[in-house]
Amino acid sequence: MIIAAVLALYALFGVVALPRLLARGGWADRAPRLGIAMWHAACASVLTSAVLAVLVAAIPASVVGHGLADLFEACAALLSDATAVSPAGVLIALSSAGLVAGRLAYCAAAVLLKARRERREHSAMLGLLGRHDSTLGAVVLDHTEPIAYCLPGEGRTVITTGALRSLPPEEVAAVLAHEQAHLHGRHHLVVAVGEILCRAFPRVPLFQRARSEIARLIELQADDVAARRHARIHIASALVRLATGRVPAFSLGMGGENALTRVRRMLGPEIPLNRHERLTTVAAVGLLIAGPVALALTPGVSAFLTHHCHDLLAL
Amino acid sequence: MLRGLGDLESVVMDRMWSYRRPASVRDVLEDLRQERQIAYTTVMTVMDNLHKKGLLRREQVSRAYLYEATASKEAYTAELMRSTLANGGNRAATLVHFLERLTPEEAEALEAALQVYPPRGRSS
Image (cartoon, rainbow over all chains, first blue to last red; front, side, top):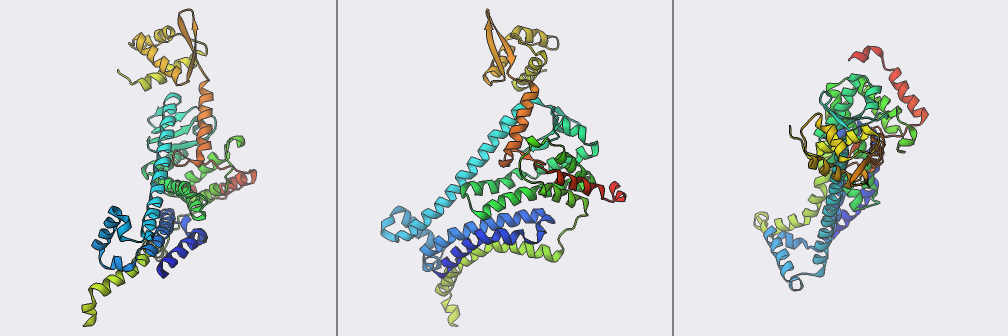
């Protein structure tokens, strides 16, 4: 019961405090890929501990202790004849775990299918409105505003004539490399995680922060990939031109902070995490994921050990 | 050269947009026949599809339909861009960047950041 309480408390703590803890220090801007992994791990960690808290509270350690075979047997017996074997608690626990999984699966399907439908419609319109430029490897749209984006899944990179006019060729190449990085890295699936969690469990601070941070970090990540082949100054300069060339009425109110971060980042040299920082971060990701599971298994494992190894212990 | 219906739709729409006046299937057919072999029924089917999709509107004049683009190409493009940018919320669909709204001060700060960048590094 103590374990269940600890897991539940941790889940509550994580939902509120993890967003602030993880955003501290700005280390993620230097290693966006790890930063994204950390946010994913934090979400998974909180979700699993919430589910495990219920499971641990309802399923006695002795059941786990008798070995996994017995556990499965108990589950099977429960499913075939729920009244005979187990307390209602187990049923509630299993069904609430099932509900969480089901809700996640449903929302994942909804978000991904909707996105795919939108992309297909968008792609069909691009077929009518744009022309493919094989030298650029992108669809060119006649439009005065400088815009560049990509359509994942359809594998299309789109750039407007406005952008082509306002950017010199080397900056166009840098922008397209950024978009290609999104496509090759399947970044739409990475950001979809945040969308799905927010849709499945709205108004959870951790998930909301994770969604916006992942969306932000994925841009930094694509900048980094583009910077492997293109001069950082070209990426920075393209960013400035694309960000400042927008007709104000057309833009969304998101604040220019992100653009400024990206430009400053590209103007300075790359400062990767040092060995120590990197190890700490990777360990933290591991701990976030494995911690709750390990904790939940502790009573089961110790019961298992006492059950099967008492001969050894007796020696 | 065989092309899919999707490609033909694009060709027909381009013609319709370039006319800037209503045209019948026959008009489009004759125009297209200057470049390729194509059957009347094919063009008719394509234009009927475009009408169903709402890209062309038509009215019956005597025995034939006269077709016209519902909106200009520019208007469609502007609408596509508007919906794409508005879709910034659904980032799983399109990854659009640089959609931040900049205040004049932020724009200035960006330009300034570029200006102070040491010129010797610019070639690197």
